[in-house]
Image 1 (cartoon, rainbow, N blue to C red):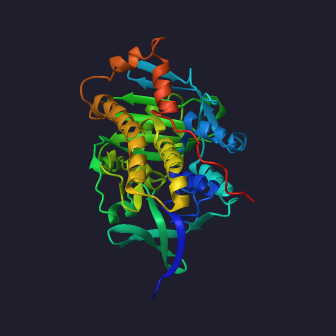
Image 2: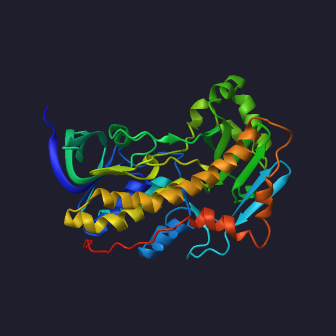
Image 3: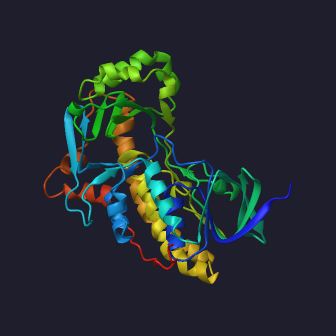
Length: 410
């Protein structure tokens, strides 16, 4: 059956943080853009929802911060981690941003917010239940993509295709891109338990020999990440659900024993297979990948969503004028990679350092009780304690909004 066909300036595959932010900014700048999201909505649990001050600053620059902070969220102005007998703390002080806190917000609210504001612009075309399936190539250049929709096959012709479809990107695979795998010694088992008023409200992090847990305050429940050695999920399940619950109870800083019955079966536990990778080249004529499609991040520091948003802002700043003129060249696309490659590389190297020198050895049970590395202890000193906060919460080479509001929102 012949596919239906439409024409746009920019076609974005994937309605995650990178895709939605890029689509919104381009439409706001008057560029016709079509965004494809394969699901019917954004309601998927256990996705990155750590909104850093760098992203909140962008909302401020867009004039949307007050409305954004009306969405359900919790605020965190410091992060503590217990590593054996040591406790390290990162306080969000000295940040050059309007907001001095991290906002924990369900990712679906974040994406719905961008979609709702994007729809105010006539050049914003968001298509749900539309999944990129292949690229359209002519004369060595990508000129569009093919999608599967509820109404049948759809061809989208575009001056530029942007792959924002995550770490298992179809666009990346169809383009022939293969990322360099940088390694990750861990996977994460996500689950939730109810929260009581007496629990406290700060982020809970605890590492002991052979086990690690992080608990994030979601208001009426805790979103829990139980970190396990890479590819060990089968062994954890073999030991049984009761042992799993007992280990979690032992690692929590308050009494959660009775609540762990809420984890009724392994169906209540979702596995995140952690990957850290990056493309050597993010683009080819007519196409570029950004966000997780270009570089999958470790969950350490909750930086993934924010790095993806930074990619999108940089891409919009560079692409808006060339897209309006129909003059997107390889040099244009190279400028995006050149802008974002170093911040990605630096952030991933920080994650790898923590993985390889702290988390990996601790999970493997090497040595005795784990200790905080000397560098982490040094960063608690008054003269140095602002450094990790700025790197984690503000990012390396933070982006700013340079695209105009030229789309005549209705």
